[in-house]
Length: 231
Image (cartoon, one colour):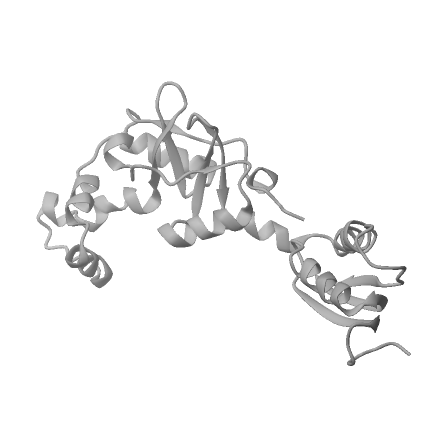
C-alpha cells in the first residue's frame, strides 16, 4: 500500500562531473532526452543538478556578451528584480557543470515514500529529484512523470490488493462479505460488515491505496450506527 521512491525511480541515470564543459552537458541532455542531469564528484556523491533552464541562462543574458541590444523576456527581468540575480549571472558566464549547476541539490532516499517526493518537489519547485544512498551517492532519479505511474496501475492489480490485503486480512469484527470491484481506478465497495466502524475504516484504507482515483462506498453494517444498517 505504500509505494516507495525505489519502486518508480529510474535507476540508469545519466550524470556529469563538475569539470564537464557546457557543450558536453548540453549534448548529454539532448542525446539522452532528459531535461536535467545530476552533477557528481569522483566518488559518485551528488553535488548539484544542471537543468535546461541553467543552460539557457547564456541566451537570456547574451546581450552582456555580444552587445546585440537583446532584451530578455519579461519573466527573466522580473526574476532578476525578485532576487537570485548574482546566481543567474554566475550561471550565464559558466563554462563547466560546476559553474552552471544548482547546488546543493535537493535529493531523496530510495526508501522514502512517493508522498515525501511529491512534497519535496512542491516545496523546492523542482521537477525531479536525484535519489541517493546514505552517503549521498547517486542511485537513481525520480521525476514527476515517474510519480504519475502509481495512478496507471491495472484495475485488476488494485482490486487484488484491496480484496486480499485489506478486506481479506483478519482485522475485522466477525465475518463479512464485503468485496471490491475496480473500473478505471475507481473502487466500488459493496457487501456487509459487522460493525460500522470497520466499514468506515475500510473506506479510509482503500483511499490510501496507490492508484485509487476515487472510492464509491456502498457498504452496509449490522451494528454501530443507524444509517445504511443492513436488514
